[in-house]
Length: 301
Image (cartoon, rainbow, N blue to C red; front, side):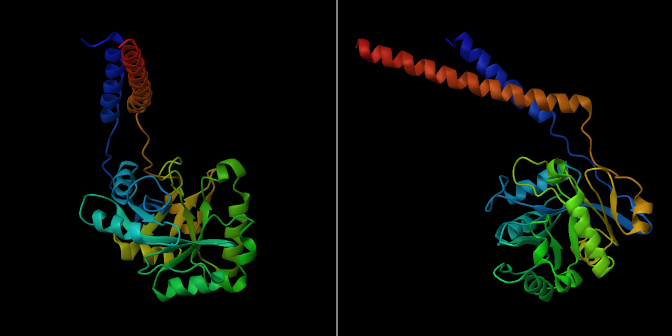
């Protein structure tokens, strides 16, 4: 006969499963059209398993759809294997576009390479890495260019850089000034550049917490890459300040279409997590109690 402790544990775990299932809502995304362009929401700096992220590449594509994203770029450190896998599966299911990308990781800079066919080495100056990305007709974005990385980007590198992250989760703790200063310097040297918002998702930050609004001619990889190359993007930093081309900012006005969980769904999700944790704890206690009972029985024997 099942004990009261086991019954409570199983009930709590079951409640967690039910609540989690009820909260698993897939929004119906239809990108708005502004000024003749589709406004696609993108997270262009995402890490997956087979690197130092926790989700498999295909799970990232599903989670991106759940978060109302139209485009993600899988950008593991110094490799593109996971990105290729993610793109393969995304092309075969109802998922957002997945760009093949890489976070080129060097001691003095991090660089996001998008729409590339081969990984690019970080064992060279940043201007050489940018040239290697462009030789593949890819796009090069400065990743979280804080003051630590600023010395690597001389005038030659800035002239060739396609854009920079100006919205990133680290600004929630450090403030937006460092990324704002870099983007202003980039625009001063280069002129029009892509303003990028990214979550740098690994495990804990929410996918799409910071996002890029891409003004694309259509929903395709080629159109997204072309828009980035032309600087047709807007990103809102942690203080809600918009960065990018002033005409596009005026067209967009405010962030659009970020899915907000209805209160009931949000509370179901919270209840599901609590129930699952309590259920797991109860089952662990049940297992330990059974272990002690078995040990006492063996000693009596």
